[in-house]
Length: 287
Ligand SMILES: Nc1ncnc2c1ncn2[C@@H]1O[C@H](COP(=O)(O)OP(=O)(O)OP(=O)(O)O)[C@@H](O)[C@H]1O
Ligand SMILES: [Mg+2]
Image 1 (cartoon, rainbow, N blue to C red):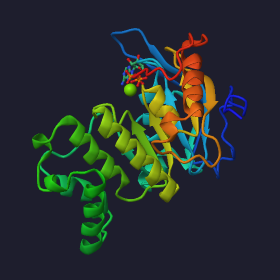
Image 2 (image 1 turned 90 degrees about the vertical axis):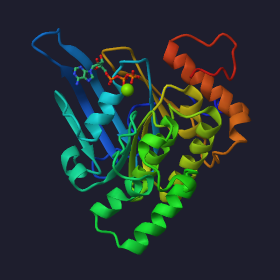
Image 3 (image 1 turned 180 degrees about the vertical axis):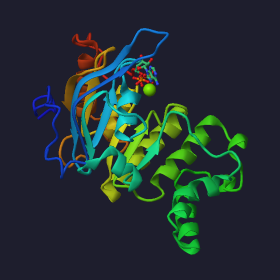
C-alpha cells in the first residue's frame, strides 16, 4: 500500500496526544503582530494552533517571511505572542527556557568567537556544572559525530559557515535535550554533508526520543526527517495544512530516500505548498 493510500492527507494541527501536560509543545490561537512607530504593523502569524508530542519530529515549511522563525522564537521564549497561548512540556515558554528544557540551533551558528570548537560545544555542560571528565567524553563524542575532530582546538572564524553550523548543532545536542528547536540548521551545508547530518539527526532523535521542531525550505529534507510536515501560508503566516508523512516503523536511512513512499510524500507536501497538484514531477527537488 502506498503512503498516499495510507492516510497521507490533510491532518489536524493537533498532535497525537494533545493535553497541555503531555505535549512537548502546545500552541493555541497564537498571533504575532510587529508594530513600529515608523512602519506599518506586520502580522507575522495569525491563529496558529499546533501540538508537538514528545519524541515527535515536526517540520515547518513555507515561503520566506511567512513566520517560521517567528514561531520558533516564540516557542523558545526569545519573543512573546501578541495573543494566544503557548506551553512547552506543560510549562510557560519562559519557565521551559529557565529550566533549559530544549536545545537550539538557529539560522546563524551563534558561536562564541573567543572559545574553541570544543569549548563552544562544552558551554551548556559547563554552565550546568557537569564534571570535567564527563564533559570531555561528551564533547569528544559530539565532535566525532559532526566530523570535526581535527578542528577541536580551532576558533569559529577559522571554520567555514557549514562547519560553524555543525558546531552549533553539536552544542544544541550536548545536554541530550528532550526538545530541539532548529531553524534551517543545514542550510549552509553542501548536499552530501547535509544528507549525512540528516541521517545523524534522525538517528540521534531515534536514540534520545527528543521531539524536534525543524524549520526548512527543503521539501525532501522535511519529508525525510519528519513525522508531520506543517505547511504555512505566505504572510500573514497561518498553518494551511499538516501532512503526516512518516509511516510507522519507517527507518530513516538512505534507502528511504529512494523509496516510492518518499517521492509520494514529497509530491504531497509540494502540492500543499503550492496549492496545486504537482505536474507529474515525482521526486522534484525544491530546495
Ligand atoms: N523583530 C521583528 N520586527 C519587525 N518585524 C519582524 C521581526 N521579526 C520578524 N518580522 C517580520 O515578520 C515576518 C516573518 O518573519 P520570519 O523571520 O518569521 O519569517 P521566516 O518564515 O522565518 O522567513 P525565512 O524563510 O526567510 O527565514 C516578516 O515579514 C518579518 O519582516
Ligand atoms: Mg526564518
